[in-house]
Image (cartoon, rainbow, N blue to C red):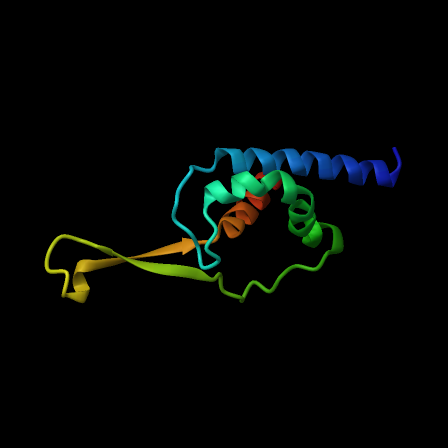
Length: 113
């Protein structure tokens, strides 16, 4: 089998894997710092699957891995607990990651299985 055919098969399998991950995301309305929710990404996914898969697999094909020291960017939302809403201790911080960050992470986890 030629190298081009192997690469094409890798991308086709990767597209299927990525598509399966996106389909299984719950339709939440919460967003990360980019303002995109799961429903929106599911809607536009057919248009972005090829470039997105390419971006996700660049570290695997190029051998260049992003710096692990870089932090993920998340939107922090205070979730109120019971009690006085004027007290800071009555809030729990929730971090909302972007759907693309979640997708990238799941893609690498599934591809390493």
